[in-house]
Image (cartoon, rainbow, N blue to C red; front, side, top):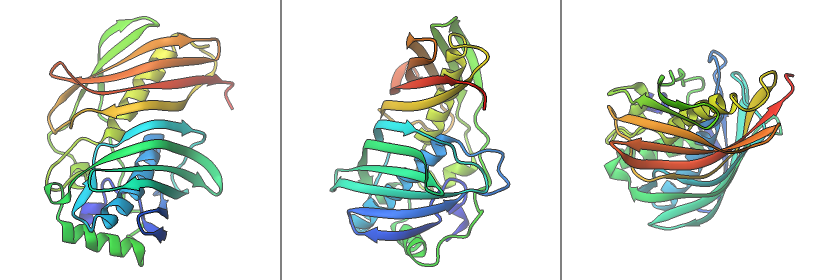
Length: 278
């Protein structure tokens, strides 16, 4: 597998495949990373589903900008651990793939995805079909080179508006060039939705911290109704916003939104709970 599948690829090997229906895979999180976010775990599950869908479409089409109905975050994955991945394909045709999936570490659940849909677009617009076919054969055979992912520096957020306990708004500046664009995608660079969601979660946790008990650990447990409405491109400035829908002593529900040039490009909502430090 070529180096272009190093900066944003999270399936090392496809260990079982029932064409067009289900797959199992693995990804060894490099031990040298500082962390591996839950959003990248979700990306790994989505990439496994994408491999199944691309193979089913004979590498003529690929899913891009998936919609996620319900993501349950039930654990964490750390550098040095091995992610076991699974997907069940509910439907797959020339227009879209619908799937659900999960990620585990040593039989301990980390994340569950339900009601996910990836619109299918021409693969050749994003990557070289024959190269992708070759990468798929490698994944189904000996597997990709382990520990090839070098990590990602999360884009900084610049706070631009704040209503204490109610709303936070920040600017995210997408770099003009970055290694992950080599994977996402070689012919048409697109800012990954999982990195956008990671930034939104960071902002939401900050807002929840203004309402939930200050002496407890805040943990995202659910992200729902995530919709990507258009691509975010290199060089874009994205305005992300989180708002408080409701809060109790131990949990908060928040809205998520992202805009580029005044146009809404992504929406969703999430739940955060507070726990005793452990």
